[in-house]
Image 1: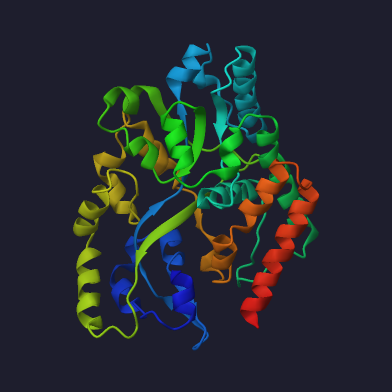
Image 2: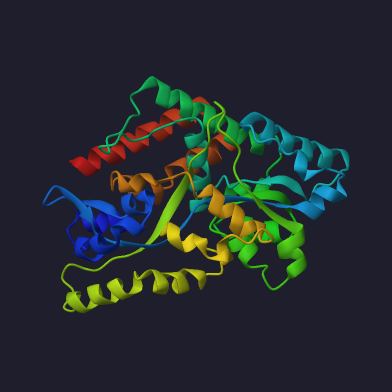
Length: 353
């Protein structure tokens, strides 16, 4: 929504708020609040970064132990990592455990988690949907090839029954609830909301549940996490714009932002690297927060930063729609790939017309 409001000229330029503290932010955070005003055809800061979150992997150590599996043996290469979880599913099948699945990957157009998770798979296969100017790259053969590989792999988990059959109908809360209920051994989720919900229970939080980094890409290079920047914006026609900007300046003082972000108890992370020196973010006992911080060392913002038309791709959940169809066998991965590309191209064409 924010990229669209900026595009339509409805947001105030807050460059004067950010510039005095600009050097304190990560590059990803600054890119995450840089938008285009269509009227002036110029890019600027139309929001201020407050906090950030990536996509994290959680698993139940105790469930793996019950199956005699050692999580310390989880490979860090892409193929080995996912093959290891396939082994978990085969172990469950041998034990005739039908109410527990290895993976909690959403395959539903009703969940924003679906496109978020799948776009990390696209990142793994080096798919760049947009160039630096925000133009679509879907006409490039290598882009289609990468989409097809990611889509085929992602939906195969469902077809292999490593993912619960209900995953095609999930909303954003379902993978959280089902994982916490012990129906999946592993899941991926934006923010640390899943472990955060278990903080009152030391055994579940510190001993049973684990958060780990993503594996390396199939080509062996490090995988960039996709960062959602939590941000504050001001309407251009606000009658109290000066006062609102003064408040944001106050909030962006490092000592104030530190208190504000820590109030989420780790669900969101700082956008100012200097704040990460606080022991709260480095506690080796808290593997959820300390590992989440590690994954945020190599990131990029979501595509709507490059072109606001991509907000509509997400709003329609183009990826979720074709993933569900391919997972259920209604269409082939090839057809799903071409349908997604065609719809995305139409969205961009209509946006520009």
